[in-house]
Length: 169
Image (cartoon, rainbow, N blue to C red; front, side, top):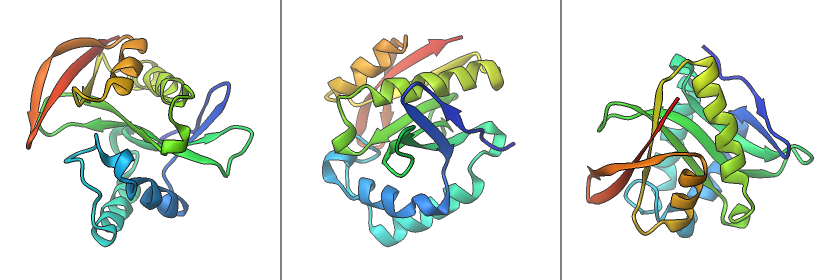
């Protein structure tokens, strides 16, 4: 199954493509962006590019994967990424997102995630999604709460103790 393009009032979401690699690598090379992603460290660029290329190759499997997020009016203005990912450390599908620091605080995460949730529930027929958030990441907690996710405990991921949120259809 291929991921469809999605649009919102301000945004255009399209499945990851190889052309996105420079923007993804630049975003993921920013320590501020990576602070609350995975282990919080900036990844080795060579190894990270290899992982991203593999993700792009398999993007859309099971209808899950990542979209690059752009302004509708400027389709060359990469803002960040949003996706639906099958978790390995917890049984569920996670809403995952990250944005360039210049795109923070403008409502893009909430707007793109809303389109992604609609796809997850209406098109894929999922009954529940989860979100994992670092306790210190209050902006992301606000986004998740605006989307309707409810606190559901904590989850240990490596060295991180993450907040677990759930959203039911």
